[in-house]
Amino acid sequence: MTIRELLQQRAEFDRKYWAKKGSRSEWLQHITLHLGKAIGKLAAYLEQAGHGNLPPYESLTTEVATDAVGYALQLANLFLEDLCWRTEPGWQDATLPDHQDDYFESVTSGGFSSLLETAYEDLLYATSDLVRISNQLDASSKEDVEDRSILIWQAYENLLETACEIATYFGKNLENLYQERLVFLAGKFEQSH
Image (cartoon, rainbow, N blue to C red; front, side):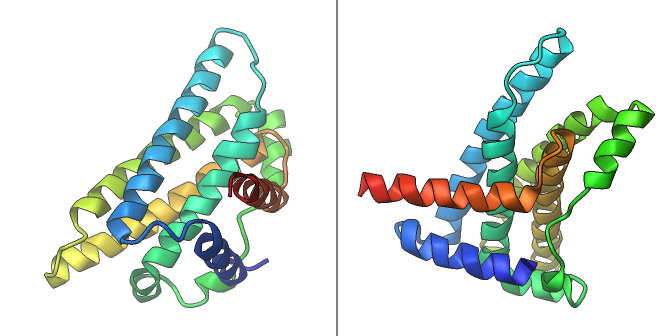
């Protein structure tokens, strides 16, 4: 699927299951809180791995990576006009990053473990950018709006890179993981209502 198709799919999903969220501020707060949880999960995994323990990784692939994609898409949908103004034409025609070839290259070149550390850094950067975006929501000067647009694009890219790095590290297909996550979340929401 292209990013455009994923944005449409995410918008429909959010209309159906997240209608209670109204303002951009509420959305950003929700996303930022969940990214904090994701940072904790990734940090716990890295900490355990640093001590020679390899804890189960499923929550990283089925939650952290897939939720990072979802939050990137939500952010893009919330600020689509900022992204379209700021980015290269055709960005919505791309697909999710897929570094499966990098997976094998990183295993053979010894850079395998640093991929998760990079994902951790990218997630921290994205979260920091979201906090800064929240502080600039009411900005009206041209300079502030341009700065916010840059932060939105950086956060969007960092979230997608985080997801891709995690999926690559564990040899998983990111788009398949994301689609499975949407099905899981839809079932979870359907059961609770």
